[in-house]
Length: 258
Image 1: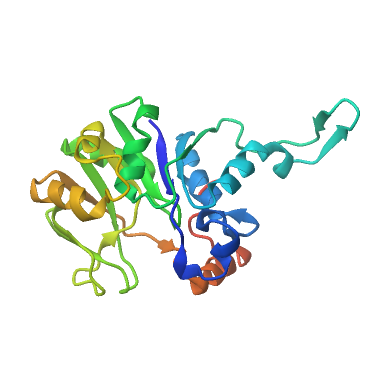
Image 2: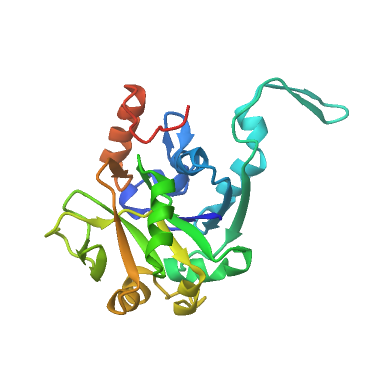
């Protein structure tokens, strides 16, 4: 089972920050939020990742290509180019596939474009800007129990996000509204069966929420895993400051790893 992370968008609401770096590379406590998301999955034994890159994706490629040098002390012999690393990091088990899915491509198109890298019928999917103290094992268990195509994680958000309308955990509608009436929105951390890919195209204008998930919801093929814990999204500058303060104060609720 692989975790797919959508990391190709522009992140326009973060202003000048994303003029320089892509949104998933904005740091919390000295590490990209992308790294924090991967650590959540890795805590539950999910160590294979497919990262859909786009805008400034070369920076994400460089980060992982030189991961050991960034995260270890080392000695380099300039003449031979031999490098000796002096310490260890905890991500040795990670296998990361980085796929350029286009600059302008919407989320559904990005997911369809990495289809060939998915081996299993069930895979995980999330956005490159949200963290939570979610139990990934319980999420997967819930998905396997209901035999539907998609599970999305419903979280309690600030009202500026859209909403999920659900009844008995079956999604009735999937809409983007400025206010929430029932207190749940799609917080990422999704699980899907391979059949989802049949609803997508590799076209730039193929979205995920608008169109495919709406159709699947109307067919009764989307379930919601209700996460009653903590969730935050790095959507603007205020969020960046808040998440970094939580980390600095040792109150980072998503840090479930040791």
